[in-house]
Image 1 (cartoon, rainbow, N blue to C red):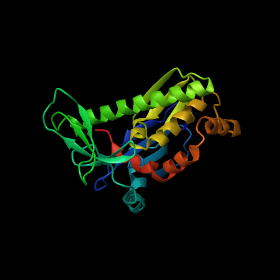
Image 2 (tube, one colour):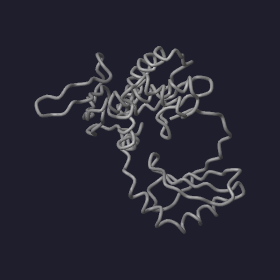
Image 3 (cartoon, rainbow, N blue to C red):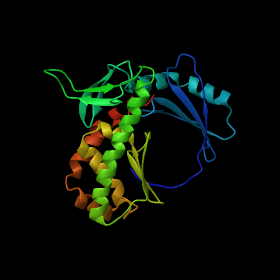
Length: 249
């Protein structure tokens, strides 16, 4: 979470490695002097940074010499979860089972059903199974947008600031960001977290409209508009990474 600035992005290429069940991204960077390798928990991918003049063949050879290390670290990364029927999905912090109806219903696209007996609440998605995951993903993003707009409006009025626009994206490196043009961007996965967590991230980015840093004045303003911020921050540190397992189709 924080401010965003425009910078030149490195060139990214894909590398296929036989027997490796993960995406390999090779990034050519103008300032890189050697090849580096890491495993991304949020993307469930292997990320390589190489000098501009490095060939894909050289990158592949470097990767092959470190395959045991890569497989070991990939094995420690939780497997991604798709938005398919039967899966368990947290919605506003509570687990729900995804159910596809298999047929289009004119009355709803997605319906939240409370638990019956000892069962679990359900997210019932109307329409064919082929398009249901995308409909559910779009609905979740819309729910996140609704909740975030309400909480951003609340904190902005309290602090006397005003964002230019609020955007919900499929971002995995940050929960939220504030650009120099006063555009607030958020991850749709915040709708999976408890409402207090979404509220905290909204407050965090609103404060960046007044303080484009993470200094003492910044944190004092976050505390002012959300006194129980520490609980939400702690939740994100412990459980936030798990939310990145849920992937849009």
